[in-house]
Amino acid sequence: DGGITQSPKYLFRKEGQNVTLSCEQNLNHDAMYWYRQDPGQGLRLIYYSQIVNDFQKGDIAEGYSVSREKKESFPLTVTSAQKNPTAFYLCASRDRGGNQPQHFGDGTRLSIL
Amino acid sequence: ILNVEQSPQSLHVQEGDSTNFTCSFPSSNFYALHWYRWETAKSPEALFVMTLNGDEKKKGRISATLNTKEGYSYLYIKGSQPEDSATYLCASRYGQNFVFGPGTRLSVLP
Image (cartoon, rainbow over all chains, first blue to last red; front, side):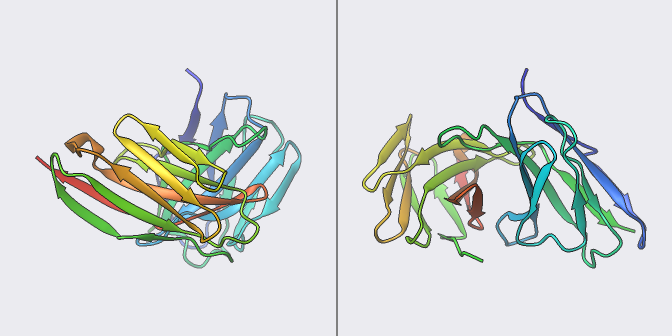
C-alpha cells in the first residue's frame, strides 16, 4: 500500500537535546511538507520541499531544520533552539501536478521531559 | 501570514440532523480550497479540492460550495451519522503552500 510513514508515534526529549522526526513516503510525490499543530490552532507550516535537494522555510521555521537527500524522505530535526517544541507534528506529501490534495502521515507527538 | 478561519469551532448534532460549517479565506491571490476530514487517531483525508467560483462538489452525503469573490466555502453534511464525527479542516492554497484553518470539530450523537 502506498502512503506516508511517520516515526516514532510518541517521542520524548530532554531539554537541550536535538531530536529527529522521520517521514517516509512511497507515493512518488515530489512535494513534502512539515506542519505543527498546537491546541486550538490550525496546522502551521514549518518547512516544505518541492524537489530533492531543495527546501524552503515555512511560517515557523525557527528552531527546526530539514534535509531532502532522497525523494521519499524528509526528516525534521527539532533543535535545542526551538523554545517550545512540545506539539503534534504532521508530515504530508503531494503530487505537484495540477490541484492534487496532500496526503498525510499519522503524526508524531513530541513531549519535553 | 494569511489567515484562514473556520466556524463554528465545535458542533454537536443528533444523528439524522443536517449540518453545515464555514471556511473563510482571503480572496486575493486565491488558487484552490481544500477540505479534509480528520478522524481521531487517524491522519487527515482529502474530501474536496475546489478551484472555481461557484464550484459545488459532492461525495455521498457531504457537499461543498465555493465563493472565491467573497472568500468563503461551505461544507454541508446531510443526515449526519456517528461515523461523520471528526474534525473538518479547510486549507487555502497560495502558490505551492497551504494555509489551514483551525478546524470544526463535529460530534454526532446517536
